[in-house]
Amino acid sequence: METYLLDWANLLVRWLHVIVAIAWIGSSFYFVFLDSSLTPPEDAKLRSEGATGELWAVHGGGFYHPVKYAVSPPALPPHLHWFYWESYSTWLSGFALFLVSYLWSPSVYLIDPRVMDWAPWAAVTAALAFLVVFWVFYDLACRFLGKGEHGDARVGLAVALLVVLAAWLACHLFAGRAAFLLVGAMLATTMSANVAMCIIPGQRKVVAALKAGQPVDPIHGQRGKQRSVHNTYFTLPVLFAMLSNHYSFTYASAYNWVFLILIMAAGAAIRQFFVLRHGYKLGRNAHPWPYAAAGVIVLLGLIVWLRPAPAPAAAAPQAVNLAQVQAITAQRCVLCHGPALQSKGVRLDTPEDLQKHALQIYQQVVVSRVMPMNNATGMTEAERAVFAQWFKPGVK
Image (cartoon, rainbow, N blue to C red):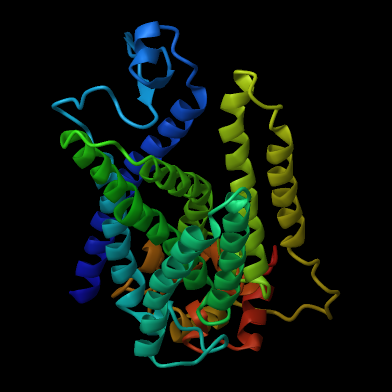
């Protein structure tokens, strides 16, 4: 019953998480486009009121005319929409999903004895620490390195080094699948913390000053802009990390931390292409194709790097029958893929099921070697060789 209820919790929370993440990321993408597409107002009245940019757009049969005031509008409107619940609900649902999927069963999902064999409570504590410690160092970097002419460059370099260190450390402490997800959760926590700890408090101070008839300190807008820009470049790396658990070849390699860093860099480069493309269309900067090209080149390099090695020449094949395979799966696999529990909807306790999922078994057990998960049931190399021989055409 516990497994059944956990599956329902996983389904419902994952559904919620995807919905609210779409809302948050969608609004983030829209405002990046909007901010990059604004042109100086043509109306003298708007300029006299302090408007710094405007955009005319058409959508859904209607025309829209958003106007931006860099510091403050001439008068505060009675109804002001705040963009923060998209962020908060995404983080809360994501953390709930992390709790149900990973922290609830750390011995299965967080711990790989081949990487580090430690107590479940210690692994859970370390995982939670990743979320907090990265934010603390990131926030310090923004506050103390972001001043002066080259402040943004210094902060960018510091954040990049922090991400590299965190990726290396996570992949040397946790199971590869959990490490990738944890780095993504770490960045997502920082994104939401930027909203909760910097962007929204700054906006509240601006609104309070306007209501009190006091001058608005532009520093709040500058800080909010800085954190929003960082959130923009975190987006694609976070999305990859959240999807990576479905693709074992990404986290199963010996140098999975290098792969994680490179693919996140590729995502950030591709995001930079889309950000600068808006400015290019208005003649503000050169065509940003080198960023897209760099991202694609990195992705192609990763595809080549992780390609399956050619099978070595083997001795004359030994006969392997289905009964031998079924005996191994009964001992190593049926615990999670049997009548009581059918993880990922895969059942492996009957000959028909083994034939049906032969390709998946070969990929997960022989090629990527991620199953059994973290080799919790102790599958031997000889047993993996049996699966490899059984899968060869004409042997089954």
